[in-house]
Length: 224
Length: 81
Image 1 (cartoon, helix red, strand yellow):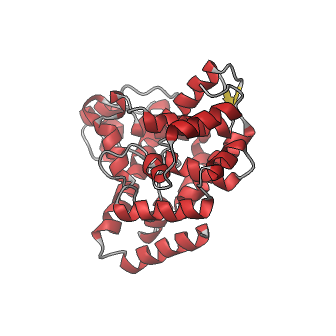
Image 2 (cartoon, helix red, strand yellow; image 1 turned 90 degrees about the vertical axis):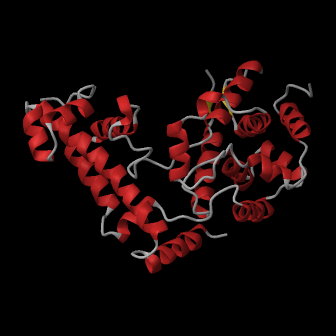
Image 3 (cartoon, chains in turn cyan, green; image 1 turned 120 degrees about the vertical axis):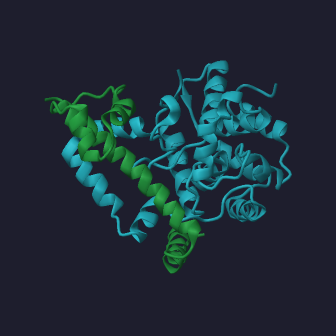
């Protein structure tokens, strides 16, 4: 199984920072595109720029998507919300970890959010966990491409190729269930959200097949 | 765009409308519930590890022993005693 390279992890961190900057409480494929652009030092970002997508314009475009309601507008973070009712999230996290240990806290987070019979007391997410990463399909596609190309590590190019494949492939049915819908609603995502990277790239008139071909060429596989 | 700016903006908007705006108030309650469920799971599991009965735990939580058993009997984490 291919591992993410340090470069790809850096792109993910930048994508998280971008999501934070927009006041988004989820990490989606659209933020990954911004992360790749902000990182700037990869073949993926050069290819994106060659297709007319740059960071400043992409940010403007994402804000426009928020106005159209395809992604949420800025929302306060859980820490800020809890602060409003006088609860210090950081202090609670710190004391809980000190008292019970990180392992027990991780278990309790899974326990509170896992599927239970008749859903007793289950919450879609908890402030003690990072914002949900809604890029599982991107990572799956990136992994599949890595296997197909016989690559050991997943770099920014494969991540972006994963985003492109994700846009072109419908999400599997298992991604549409009550708990997922509740999770999406809890971070303010519109009904039927399937990642906003498609509309984002579409706004620049990017041909996805061409972009995918260019990424494959960069990865040394030649244009199929 | 500066991330700090957007975040401060959000906080200011939230603070200005905290008690009256249901959008913010309900989101805060949802966050609080997410927090409470995790803390409850931790405390119940800790009590079980210390040998407390479901009845004792339920009495402290103010629910029936069946309710707390139904919710937590399938747990998997073991605190070291």
